[in-house]
Image 1 (cartoon, each protein chain N blue to C red):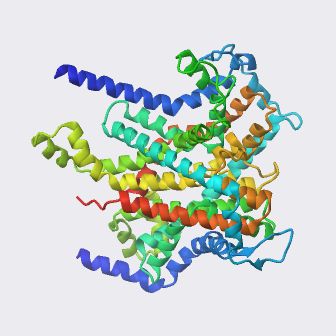
Image 2: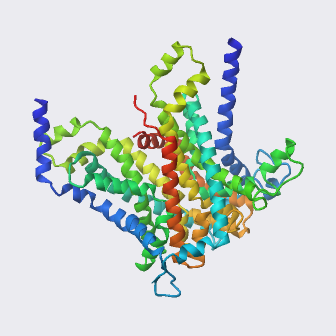
Image 3: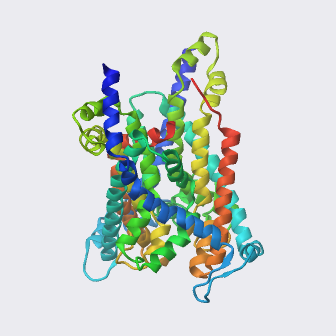
Length: 282
Length: 302
C-alpha cells in the first residue's frame, strides 16, 4: 500500500515536471539562443546554457542609429503598445456601460441585443477580414492607428462584455440599493458603487484584452503595410521571412516581443485565470 | 421593510431613464453593428458576386466563385490540410488540457507556480511563438534534432518543416497547441472545480477506485468544460494562420484555408472568391461547433 502511494507521488511529480518543461522550455530556449554568439548557437550538439555568453544581440537592438533592425524593432514595439493600449481603454470603457445595462437594467430588446453581441464571439476571422479591410480603405484609415484600434475594439468587445457582465451579475444588488435610496441615478450607481467594487473584474478584462491586442497578426498584416503603424508581430514575421537577420538576433527580438505579455502573464496570472474561468462557467 | 426599499429603489431609475439603457448601449451597438455584423453580411452577400478592384464594377456571379474554388487544386489541398490541423489541434489541446487540469485540480504548494507557467504560452503572440519554435525545428542547428540524435532516436539531422506534408502539419499545429492548451486547461479546470466533493466521497464509501471514479464521475461531469474547450480549439485551428505563415509561408504542402483566403483576396485581389471561401469556412466553423456541442456537451446540474 505504501509503495503504491509512493509510486503515485513519483508519477505525479514526473507529470508536473513534464508540464513545466512543455510550458517553459521553448521560452527558455529563445533566451538561451539570444544570449550567445552565432557560433555558440550553431554548435552541434546544442549547448543548453549560453556558451560563449554575450549580450551583443541585445546591444544591437539598443543601437538606435540609422534605419537598422533596432530602430525598426522599437518603432513596432511602440506601435503595438499604442494600438493595444488604446484599444483596451476604449473596449473596457464601452464594455463597462454596456455590461451594466445588461446586468442591472430592464429594457425592451435586451435579450436580442445581448445574444447578437455574444453571437459575434463565434464568428471566425474569415467572416469579417475582407470587408473590414475594404471599409477601412474606403474611409482612408488603412495605415493609421485609428483604423487598427477601431477594428481591435470591435473584435474584443464581445468577450469583454461577457466577462464584465458575469462579474457585475455576481455583485450583490444591495450594494447599489443604498445609493438608489439616496436618489442616485444608475450612472451614478455604476460610477460610485459598481466600478469601485469591480476592480478585479475590470483588471481581468483589461489584461485579457491587452494581451489579445498585443498578439494580433492577420488584421495588422492587412491593415498596416508600413512601419508607421506596424505592430511588432508583423515586423517579426517580416524579419523571419527575409532570412537575413541571424537567428541569435531574431531570438533576442522574440524574447523582447514576448517580454511584455510574458511578464504580465506571470505577475498578473491570478486575474487572467479568474477572467477565463468566470467567463466559462455559465 | 427591505422589500419596500427595493421597490422605491428600482422604480426611480426606471421612470427617470427610459432611454438610459439604449444610451449606455449605443457605442457597443455601433461598433458591433458597423464592424462585425455589417461585414459579415457583406461577406455573405458578395460571395455571390464578382468583386475585383482592378476590374470593376462588381457584378452578380451566381455560384461561379464557389465553382472556381471547388475546381482549384490548391483550395482543395488546403481544405484537406486544415482538416488535419483541426484533428491534431482539437485532439492534442483537449488531451493536454485535461491532463493539466487534473494535475492542477489538486491543491499543493506548487500549484501557483505551475499555474503561472502553464498560462504563459497562451499570453504570447502566435507569431513570436512560431519564430521561437522555428528555431527549435531548425534543420541544421535545431535543438529538436540535437535531442533526438543524442538520445539515438534519429541517425542524422532532419528537415522537419516543408518535406513530409503530415509531419510538417503536425509540427506546425503543435505550436498552436502549445498556445491553446492553457485555455483548454483553464476551461476544463473550471468544470472540474464545479463538481461537488460529496459525490467523490460517496463513491469512495462505495469502494470505487481512482480509475473508476475518473471514468464514472469526472469524465461525465466535466463534459460541459470539455465541449467549450474543444469548440475554442476548433475555431482556432480552423483559423490557423500565424504559425503557418511564419513556418511554412505559402508553400501549398502546409497551407491552411485561412492562408488560401488571404492569398486569393490580398495577393490575387480576387475578393469575390475570397468572400466565397470565407463564407464556406464560416459555415464549416458553425457546423463543426454544433457537432462538437451535440456529441460532447451534456447539461450537468448538481
